[in-house]
Image (cartoon, rainbow, N blue to C red; front, side, top):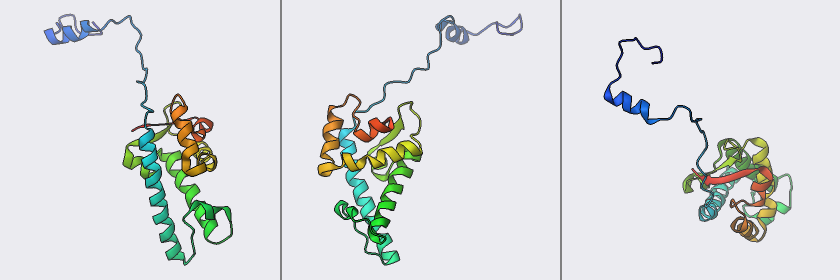
Length: 170
């Protein structure tokens, strides 16, 4: 028995454990199905992220004495003052936090995370694609994204589909 001395006799517990498993069956490393039914949590996470970004942008504006716009319509005027700073901060917030950590503050608070389709962390490119497609997903206050998420099989918005990511319970 696996290089054990000839006089070794397994205890009743050891024999029961060893006999319990069929050794000719292959070992399966199949992951359990991921819970992508997190639409309500995604909505709340988006609201929390909006609040966090508004606070962050307000703080940056006060520190650097810049008039930083905190609403989405002001981002259409990309000047070299506040709106460019706003765009950079928003891009970095989502790309870094979702791409490298899989979570923004809102996702952390609601218990969800972003993963690649392979189950790993999304990475820079996926974070970038997800973030850039927020411009389309965000039409009508993210109503377009909500309609797409509710009607897709794995509850994904356009950014998720293009970036090959999923939002799941953490």
